[in-house]
Image (cartoon, rainbow, N blue to C red; front, side, top):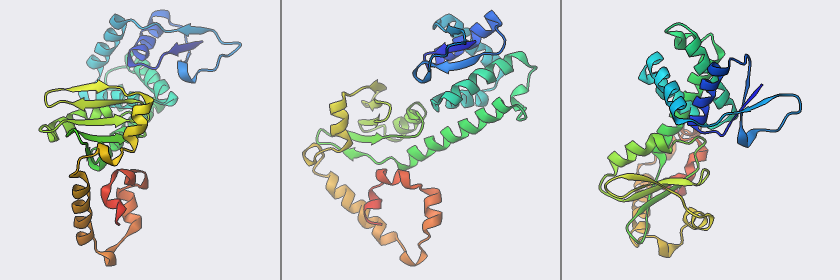
Length: 254
C-alpha cells in the first residue's frame, strides 16, 4: 500500500492519522513530486484535513518535549523523500510505544530523525553566521541564499531581533520564496523568475552608493587582520566550508 502526500507538514500528519484510522499494515510513504506510479501497489491519496493534522500534532506534543518537537520540525525542513518517510515512521512508532520511546536510538527512525535534525540545525547556524547583506538604492538590505535545507523559518527570529532597525529581505533562490522585514513584522514574499535573476546579481545602479565603500572597508579590515604565516586552509575550510564563500565579502581578498 502506497500512501501519497503532497509534501506539506499537514499532509504528513494526516498520513499518520489515516494509518491509525485504516490500520493497513505496512505502507510506503511517497511524496507527490518524487512519485513514480507503480503497477502492482494500491495507492491511498492522503487528503489534507486541518482537524486531523491538528489532532496528530497535539498528540505528539503530549508524547514529546519541546526539544523533540523541534527535531521533528527540523527534519521536515530537510525536504527530502527520506526525511518524510523517517517522520512518518517515527510518529507511528511514538504513538505505538510507551513514553520515552524517543530516546531509543536503537530504533532506526529515531536515530535518523536526530541525525537529520542536527544537519538542519547546523545549516541554520551557518546561515546566521555567513549571510552578508547588500544595501540597495532604496535603502533596503538584501541577501540571496540557496541553503541545502529550508532554514528560513528557523533563522527568521535571529535576523528580526539582530537587525530590528533596518528593512531587509532574505530570499531563498532555490525554493523561490523569501522573508521581508518592514521594521514591524516579517512576511513571506515571492518574486518572479526575472526578478530573481536580477536580484541574484544586482546591477551597480540598484545598489546604494555607500555599498562599495562598505565592501572596501570590510575587505581592508580582513586584510589587516589576516596573518599569512599562520594560514591553515584545512582548518579554515572545516569551519567555513567553500560552498558558503560566495556569501562572504572578505573572500574577494583572502
